[in-house]
Structures are given as C-alpha cells and as structure tokens.
Length: 192
Image 1 (cartoon, helix red, strand yellow):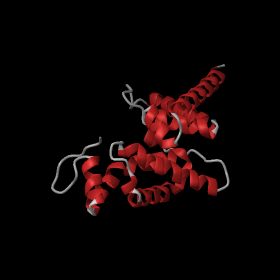
Image 2 (cartoon, rainbow, N blue to C red):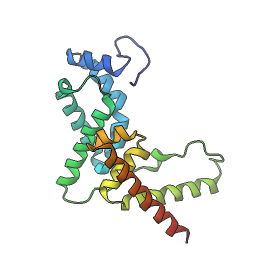
Image 3 (cartoon, rainbow, N blue to C red):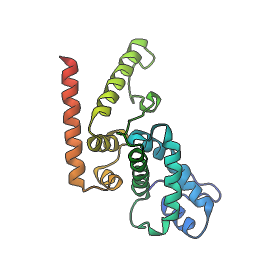
Image 4 (cartoon, helix red, strand yellow):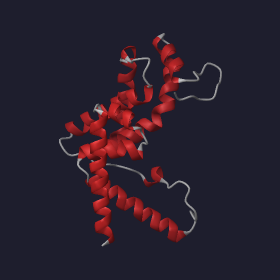
C-alpha cells in the first residue's frame, strides 16, 4: 500500500483514495493519478508506447476511473492499474501494425550506488553498458521483453508482473528466465 504525506484533504493511502473516489471525490482520484503517474508513464514507454506514452497513460487512467467499481478492494491498486496501462500499450502497438519498440531515456536508468559518478571515464563506461543492455533488451522477443522489463526495469514482483501481463506466475518465471538467458548469451558474445 503506497502512502503519501498527510495534508488537508489528501488521502494517505490507496484504500482511502479508492473509497473516496467511489463516493465521488475527484480530488481523491487525482491523488491516485499523481501517485502513479510517473510509474505508469515509465511502464507505457518501456512496453513500447514510445512517444505516445502520454496518450496511453491518459487513456489508462480514464479507463481505470470508469472501472474503479470493479476493482477488487482486497487487491493492490498498483498492479491493477499497470495491467490497464500494459493493455492500452498492447492495443497501441498492435494498431500500429508493427513490433513494439522499447523507448527509454538514459536519465531514467541512472545507476544506483555507483562510486566515481563524476569521473568522465566512469560515466562513459556506464552509458555504454546501459546502451548495450537496452539494445540487447530491445532484441528480445516481445513476450520475454515484457517480462524482463516488468521484473527488472519496473521492479515488480513475479506476482505483480503476472497480474500486469495477465499471465500465470509460472509463465512469468519461464519468460523471464528465457529472456535473461538470451541476454547472458548476448553479453558473452560481446566479451569474445
């Protein structure tokens, strides 16, 4: 359950925001939009929406609001919303009639806990590694790419990934495993 700082009228957790939204409080739904907007944009972009991520996210939030009454209150909101974002992204990429392109800005993938971040050599090596990793991820088959992106770029659990992609957990595990194996093979080829 995500929480935000308390301030007058702002729901402090998802359950409260959902209950108030269902009762007609638009500011409570706005709190959910604010809370999950960046994650929804990152999800849409990484699953292939590219420059159209804003449109996908906007449509996803509208659909989520329209269907909020069908949301199972004993479930977490985040994976439910991200599943809507994933479905909208899939609809977009399917309607474009071509394979989804993974669009990621390097600023969204800054390494955590790295030493020497200001060292130009370190920065150049880190940028090169990220670029090669993203290139390798882009070459994965769509099913494996989506599983890897959800698990490692969006840092979702296996259960959340399964919910977002509407798959059994076992399928998420196998697709993630196959995707990682392909990435390892690619890394081994780069080293030889």
